[in-house]
Image (cartoon, rainbow, N blue to C red):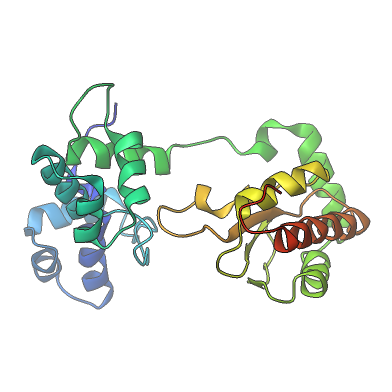
Length: 250
């Protein structure tokens, strides 16, 4: 199990780095982060003088260490999940998911330090690149790049089939994020799309808060014709759930 350290508290560490980036001395930057010069110097040395990417501009997507401390205190005091969530300004499902994922060993009381270390380790666990371990996939990607299959293929089709959706044009990569109108039942869409031979990842699987009306689409390793057909089938599934009576199964 991961061992907690203050370097895992990115909301504090990033205040130090933000001050360093403004040109502050180590002593002053450390003071802004609520720590002392020697610790600031250790952070600087551990990162090789380069500001870490982790923890920058999270905009509330991930629970902070202080929020996990509030959860731990609330649970120790016998408070309900809804009461804790209301005090934090978070969804009850976020607090429930946090307790389920990061409580540590089975039956162990929730502790902020243990939970934060587990979440930190999970987020940064080194994984070998699929392109490095799967030679067939790498050859396929190289071949597709040579043939200049581009993200614009899927963007153009999505604009035609999903005029009420929002998405960011991908600048390369392998996936794109699609935001459907609020209230869209993505669980029902997932089942309806699967019946048509189309798969995607639900947005709620990637974020702690929100993502209920979002989905993640992969567009690499397929031809423009396959993209066109896949989006067409997905649009059919979308129309099916939109026209279904409220409460009916897709």
